Image 1 (cartoon, helix red, strand yellow):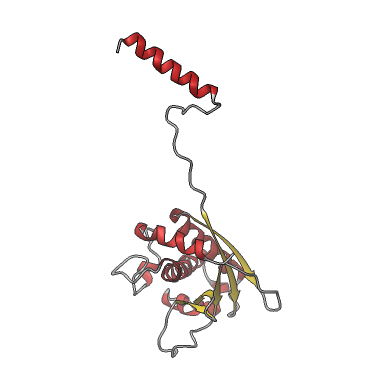
Image 2: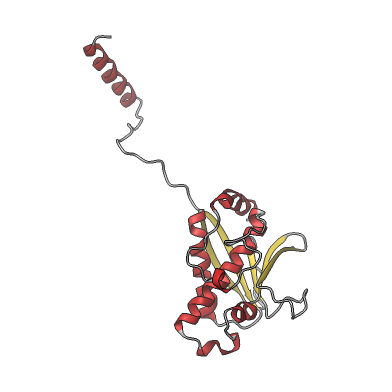
Length: 208
């Protein structure tokens, strides 16, 4: 094809697209950013955790799940309120009644009555794993509070990954079977990239 003819053909194609009212791609255009999936958490506090500690934990959960494409919103449920529907309940309890108190565990996830997905988390055990006493929280330093927020968030997201993504325990990282102090406080700890898709699918399956 003659160079002049080729330029004429390209110009004609551009005019045809314009006549259809279709936008022309701009140089350097990037695909639109996917809309984050929304995960609603309902916090039910049965061990009188100070509100600031609950709010700080929620912020850390949001920070852990945002890179996975999940936007977390939270609400605290108080006794006597009508129960909200949808999402995941996060129940804060002094201890796990299904285990002896000599078997400390940070959290567990299961479906209550076969339907409502619930994460049970145990703030006194998490605090104890950090060398802290939840009963003395009013005397904690700012650093202690930040550590507790982070550790609680890691425990909750670990359990959510089991329940929503079907993730199994791994030798290390967020899904380690032994979430010891150094792992709970590791600032590099993230939701493993290979379970992001399964996590998003699990959020999508939750009842509205």
